[in-house]
Image 1 (cartoon, one colour):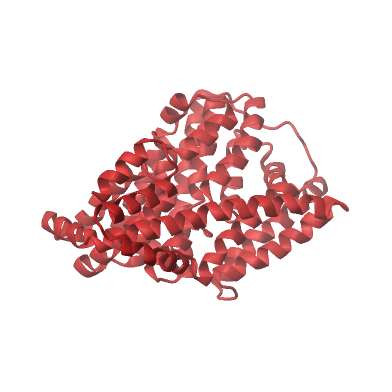
Image 2 (image 1 turned 180 degrees about the horizontal axis):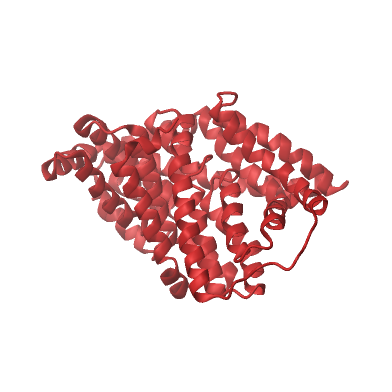
Length: 420
């Protein structure tokens, strides 16, 4: 009954958070258990009463400050001056900039939006096909939920009650592996389909240093986040706060006396975006409570165990299942709903490491950003790059395959998530 109402509401095009709450209310009233409504406020409050979740609005604020102050463009410029003479330098700039932004924003959709606005026009002016530039940019955005910090990994850590710092460290090797795969694939496509693009600037060493210094200042931010967490100096939440202080210092210099007027809309957007994410967490937690009340986790566990007793086969089945779920459901909502159902089965029945399992969940669900019919990242990149969704969905397929290859590597090579 709950599942059917969920599917019906989802097909109406209603926002996912309202679908989850609506399905919950349908169950409550049709089952005649109206007294359960009294528990909803407590569940709602408890779902976001966690210090680690404070990292979400802080990282959103950090990304907004980076964009508004122009620090994002400085990173791109600093990278390009050193490789301007290389063929297809913009392909390399695109990916290195995405890698840097992934270590700052933690949100794939925000990263795709920023890079689609900044890099795609540059690549088109340099002679690249707009569709190729858009597909590369959108696909590189998948690094966001893997390279620390990651909103999905923060939420998983809170739900699974595992160390968020360990989750962040687990994403480093798979993230770098995905970066290398996308780089090789993108370079091969550019070599086959485009003339050897290279810069014409001939800057001397002092000019390169002068152009790099502003970008190096911006690069302090991901170093503070990743380095601070790696060496145990900061918790993930504290690292976000420290990075905001650095970003604000540069932003104040950039705003030149207009700090208050520029900061107000940044805070406004941060509050709005944070509220959306946290409301989705609350809605998914309520829906998950209904599923637990109906003993759905127990039924799912019994069904999966009846299929296989091999941990590797179990993980492969989970990857297929999550890939299909990601096509229709927002990654954050799916993660919150499915983690309490699947994680106990993975640990108790198959002895799978929760860190490895969480990374597989996050990486597989994020593929839904590039797969229709939901494909939020696909629509964002298509709209900002002015490329049809149909064409872009075909162009990203090789990159989707590359991401699946990294996911399978994590399945078969568990040490990738514990490299340090």
